[in-house]
Image (cartoon, rainbow, N blue to C red; front, side, top):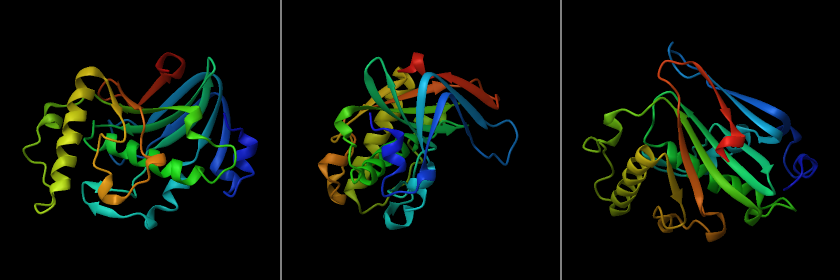
Length: 223
């Protein structure tokens, strides 16, 4: 796995990369009470955190296709860690309410992260297993109801995108896990290079009891 020294001495600012031992906490500012505000991640080992700001600070260069598909979005956290000889990249998204677009936020973050890190000597995406974690309250029935989901009427590719996204969400709700790859979505219209498309990206949903403001996730049991 790429070392923290290599990351901090790369073309990016050192502050974008920090190392934690055994524990890391991610917070989400909420304007309403009774929402998921904080998640603690525990792990027997070290976790390298890639700051959300690395993706956020370059978001303006990416296109927004529609209100439902934007390449400028990012997830809430990116972690690098190693367990039992396997290297992992974790893309974490915290949601009080299960959101239809959480899967896309993880997929886009995966693309943008690989695009940025392919310029760092020593980083090889083939050295990692990619996992997305969506942490939220249990989904409601309205999440699977696509009758009100509006898309650009003249774009057939957006219709295909809608079908793919809803099929993935339904499977994620049912099985708690889905697999994303380069054929999951129609990336071709935006000329996304093969080497940065999501390949065997496992996305898992972890439910938090509704109304709880904080939770703790044991990454050793998730991986």
